[in-house]
Length: 162
Image (cartoon, rainbow, N blue to C red; front, side, top):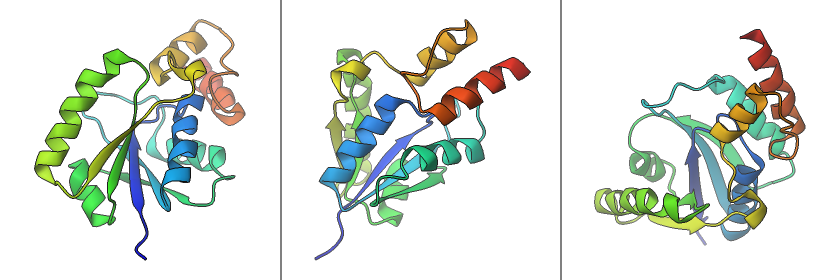
């Protein structure tokens, strides 16, 4: 039987516990989940690619059926090259839905063999995103309940460096 592979793309700058919740859910639904760091020309990440990969590998070491990768270009092309049947997208709130629906429809138009699967994180993470975590950290707030210990330490260190 062929392996059912899914792609979970994002900038993960940094990885949050909401992202990790989605990864854990996806790992139960698919034989293999590839967490892939996408290059987004509209975003200037705080952490470089190597750091973000390290954060993801550290946070997911307890999950056997995942791998971490990165790509540039069209997501559906990357999914096809990896033999993926699905793209995982997290939906926190209704505000995410309109954008994610447009992307899902465009991806389906580009490659109808790849299905977008929307997963909702645990309700305690519905407000959480990387931008909010960075903002809380910038102003000295406690971010330990939003990210892994490694991410918290590295984010505080990075912000102190300026």
